[in-house]
Length: 395
Image (cartoon, rainbow, N blue to C red; front, side):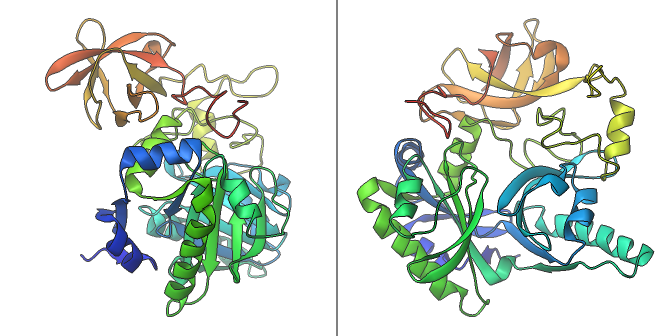
């Protein structure tokens, strides 16, 4: 099967090292993974994320219906705001994580990951069509505009300054959604990202026939404007090391329908998952799985048997996907879901889902690298000093 191409494929092929990811041909790097990674942590980086899924929902019943599909309380989402959440199956298992942007009470834009895009679309539309069969008066329309658009991620501590030089539109705070004209091209943008840094995800919408020209023009304009700020084009390699360093799980690798959001340490109940809502897909399964409720009415998660954790190597080595993790006695207790060398700290870092008794901070374990146990310990993510790096940095 031939990989799909983003509108920027020709530009990438001329400037970067191409690779296959999730059925798409994408750049792995333009200079080096480490250089691009550090550019995002210290200045800014620009990623082509056009492979991610983008859906449009319109009609007066959009948010009441999406509120049934997603565990977040979308009825509390204000115009111009974005809401991070998850798409769950009937068993409470994670199909994907996603962002919903509320343009107006009858207009939403939904962004999901590339790999599960078709399954996510079918899951959502099947539910909507089922609701329409129950009530023929429901007003909700939907359209997958992924292939009619391009999407860029402008990430890093200087991302705001770069965008401010290109538009007079007031830049909203984190998780804000806005429309602007950049280099003469109309865009929709959100102050979101997948690197742990401040930044934006910028979408250009046109037609399949003309999107290449517009996307290339905007991409080159962003790079030119950002040059004095140290902006670099970045590929999949840096995107992966950045998101792992920030402690952000990858759909299909760190989680799949076998895991629920609480096991993924993504609960934050009341924000991303509102168990007090009348209904959302997977809610009953989660209530059955975690029946213990505290005085505040929230789940206590006493029944939690396993949880995603961060691990840091105490010896030299590079933890990789599927490497075995053992306890002090040599008993296998899990596998690495994501692992790498942090370009920022030069330490081996990893994530894994482990039995709950091994998830306390500073618990020492072993990661088997090339048939040899390497000492590691449980640490908090993100795997960097949050006072110096990340979107909440104070220095």
